[in-house]
Image (cartoon, rainbow, N blue to C red; front, side, top):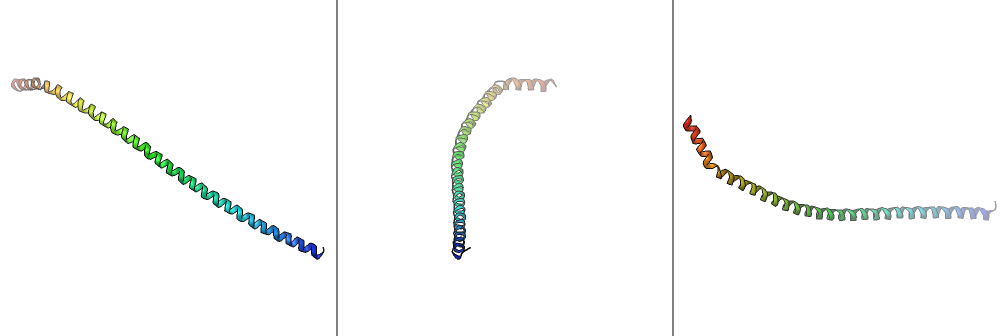
Length: 104
């Protein structure tokens, strides 16, 4: 092999090494950039999901408060009905107690 051919092979090998190093650096940067972009997308999706959950929770709390008020109103009405019924039979119950005590 001539000296010229050896120089040409050496230059080609060096050029190939340089290109490989550049390609590796470019690939590493692409991976880093893709990773960063992916993390940003995940973070953005997480924030959006948190906002959505907050909205759902607010709606659920409002519906629960409305349901709670309805249940309390119904319970109060039932208590009032029971109290009125008991008051209506109070004299009868007292008379029954007096009869049983006197008959003893």
